[in-house]
Amino acid sequence: MAPVSDPDLILIGLGANLPSPAGSPRQTLEAALDRLAAEGAPASRRSRFWRTRPVPISDQPWFVNAVAAVETNLPAARLLDLLHRIEDSFGRTRTVVNAARVLDLDLLAYGTRVLDAPPRPLVPHPRLAGRAFVLLPIRDIAPCWTHPVSGETLDSMIARLDGDQQCVVDD
Image: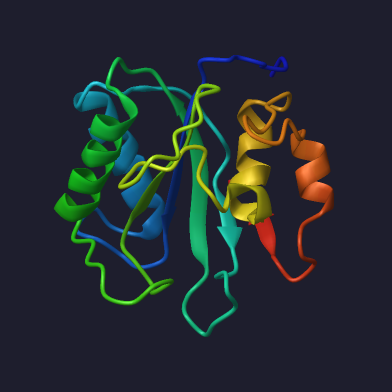
């Protein structure tokens, strides 16, 4: 795939480590992408699926993660609301931070916009620069992407990752 450096790229992180009504975590992510498309935010690109150890490290099952570039006219706050509605429809419950989950959809970046006014959304996602399960999939679809705040390249952020984050391609 040719390098992509698109200032309007809207990036969504997808993750799951528990089965949902749609099936396995991977089947859940595929169904969530279908639902995003049906709701007006189709993926123009999708990374490979990655199996990743939970962060922080725990005894819960490993995650399946991916990143998709979506096309939508929804403003960031409405897109985040849509992501939460989709999570809820798959049975996501929020009880404990970093708990196992049937579906996690994160708004990672909304073009080059920086949105940091409370209450939400915070864009770019405040922890994306330190997460292998986000950076490696972004590199699959947009290897020239740079962080809108720091200007840092993907390769630079990946080089700084903590060594105990384990991610393997699951395709």
